[in-house]
Length: 181
Image (cartoon, rainbow, N blue to C red; front, top):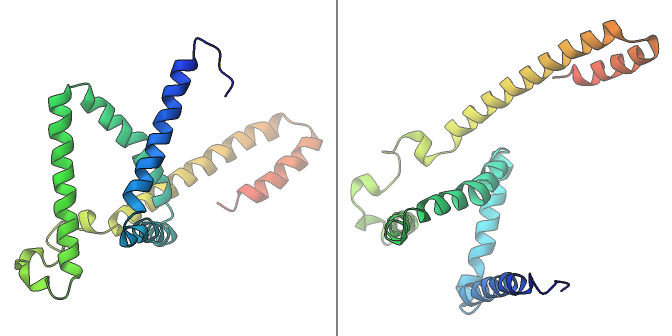
């Protein structure tokens, strides 16, 4: 590691953070054999979801690597009490949802659940299905494509009026390619 004396402490601190992150991942997922399957199952679920809803990969990246860290950072600005209470509430909700999902898929324990919790159908559709979100993102994408095509065709017309014959040929070729919008 090439670092001068003034940044060596910071570089070592970051290196130790990475090391501890990797070691904690190994300690969580590797010791118990059934836990080794969890990341693989999550990756397959992500693959199936992304294959069906193409926008989901970008949504996932933005939520996990931009919005979630930003949320945690903003909550941490409120102090340790607020941070712990908000994160504990979110963790409790996540555990509750995972427990209900596990009970819904278990054939032996399904009857333990009250009638309203045997499925998520009582929730609004956007909270238990990606179909409404898919319609929304497809509509937004169609609008963006329409605006891009409209902007491109108007800028192409302005360039064609001012250009020479050699560039007209290039613009006509690009018009054929872009006109498929």
